[in-house]
Amino acid sequence: MGKRKRAIARAFAKLGTGKIYINGKPLDLIEPEPVKLFIKEPLILAGNISNNLDIQVNVKGGGIFGQATAAREAIAKVLVEYDKSLKDKFLEYDRTLLVSDSRRTEPHKPSRSKKGPRRHKQRSKR
Image (cartoon, rainbow, N blue to C red; front, side, top):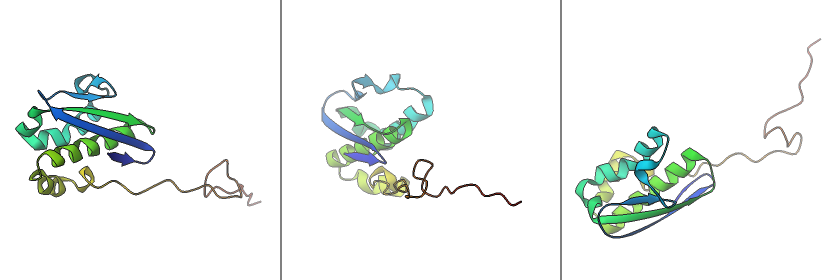
């Protein structure tokens, strides 16, 4: 499982031929290109190990990049479950592959709650 803000991804792996599906769609059809490459990072780092697994990822909530980050984390965690030797490699490359980002948006405050947490009424100097 991987998380980022409101996005939650669950990855399931089984022995197979190296196919990756995200919400039933093959990874090669994911657009835009930078998002696809971002999701592929753990697969590239794993090398030939990922060729033995079929990975299915279900992602809900959040935006495009939040979902991509959650899916990337979920895929990395599945690969580490399959081969424990990848853990040190992933942590050395990028810690967020295995550890979720705990940052969240700031809650809105009561004064002007529709405008955001720190927005105040505009004041005139003259």
